[in-house]
Picture 1 (spheres, rainbow, N blue to C red):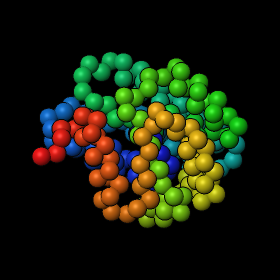
Picture 2 (cartoon, rainbow, N blue to C red; picture 1 turned 90 degrees about the vertical axis):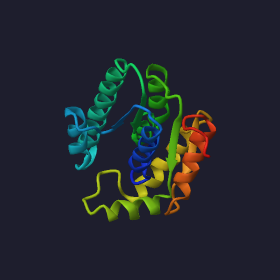
Picture 3 (cartoon, rainbow, N blue to C red; picture 1 turned 30 degrees about the horizontal axis):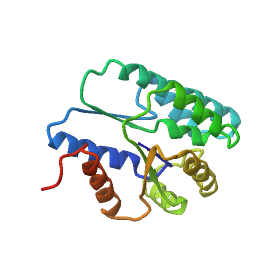
Picture 4 (tube, one colour; picture 1 turned 135 degrees about the vertical axis):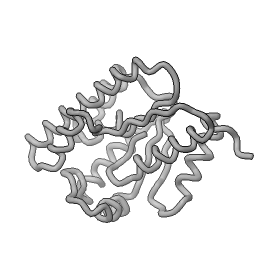
Length: 189
């Protein structure tokens, strides 16, 4: 599951996890940057500014993803939900993003279901502000608008896009319907 900052990725992932578990599924949810060393370091640099902070945030984020993929190989059963994965490449400089996406798309396992949670940047900024913590380096309207353009171009036919700009239950009901239609969840009774 991928999307811009403030798009509701973690919220959707947690709700999907609960639905799968309510049906008896075994679910592991990993959100990036994680709480492991590389994730904590990425998060630390995301609070900084400038090209050096961006470089180190990117390197630590990439290491965090690769560590998760290494861990994934040992998972024997169940469903794994990754929050922030391939679309993290949309945060690279615009000229590098398509190359980065194609590179990581070739070397990393692709999910059975790639879900892109789209959001209008103005709505994302409002939701980020409501969190009550200092914004990270990419959490400005201008940066989110630019990143969204890149991410929407990268989200090819392989991705299912859900617009989460609307407040309320509508977007999640759409996700739940899609999961039932794809037999990820049992059909509604």
